[in-house]
Length: 124
Ligand SMILES: [Zn+2]
Image 1 (cartoon, rainbow, N blue to C red):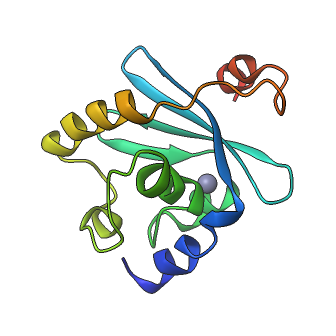
Image 2 (image 1 turned 90 degrees about the vertical axis):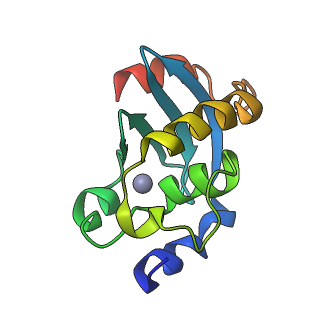
């Protein structure tokens, strides 16, 4: 994990995954940001992406904290020294691991905090 990535890693305790769903071969995760904002992390084929501005502007340097939260904390897929953080795409083996990790760590909807998570994910 480079410094850009590690700086984001240090912030993941302030955000959390509220809901996840697997649909048409895609994985979608709804993540609540530090200031009540919500972003969608999507994993499709070998790519991960996020709807936040940081991801859009800095993907050449690092993935955003929302992607780190999902892969490190929610799915427990990669530790901080994993080569994924510099590579930023999944190998076929990692996609197999992802499938298992998703089954084990799927995040069910939390109605107390989001009114309709399914609709929000599809919209974004
Ligand atoms: Zn993000």
